[in-house]
Amino acid sequence: MMPKREMRIAPSVLSADFGRLADEIAAVEAGGADLLHLDVMDGHFVPNLSFGTPVVESIARHTDLMLDTHLMIENPAKYAKPFVDAGAGSITFHIEVVEDAPALVRLIRGLGVKVGVALNPGTPADAVFDIINDVDIVLVMTVWPGFGGQRFMEECLEKIAIIAARLGPSQWLEVDGGINAETIARVVDAGADTIVAGSAVFGSDDPGAMVGRLRRLAAGAAGSKLEQRA
Image (cartoon, rainbow, N blue to C red):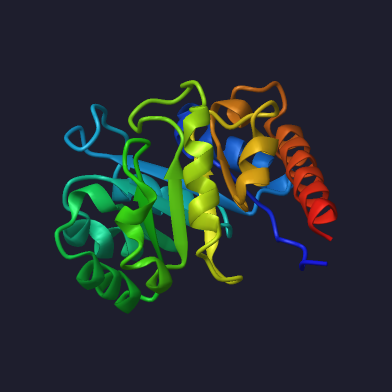
């Protein structure tokens, strides 16, 4: 039988109520969240703005969870260090915006944090093959980045499976976009082990309880797939 996969639930802070952010973070932390996903948008690479290093610094003061920082920006090399200095525990950049991905991987690795690479829905899996063995995280977007609450794109499941087949046991396959109680089993079945959920968590009546529910659903899907392969 294949070894059991470790599942991680990463609530996306962008969907939280920023007027009571400390309470929102405390709720998902108490519910068993493994890390917090931070979506940084520059209004150029994606058609929206989110937050910068001051907000990351503030979040870091209120939690010991790893801050999984997703740079949806045009110049990740310029801003990687400021976000690490603010408290980021990982930096994920988009393959679509870099000309020398290996150099950027080395730069981020030198900052002492996990390195991730993200792909938009329209970007093929092979776009990251040249660096796939050098990163800690591959993030597959299952919606077009820039806005929360979008519909999950079923056509991305094949890409998740292709990437999953190439990753080692210590690497994370993260999925972000339209993940909720109805879609989580499909991405886990395709190979995902790190689940980003924003609206599903912070839009619920009890964000902490929703984290627990998503974890149970993910674990159930992972266990079912292992039984099929045994």
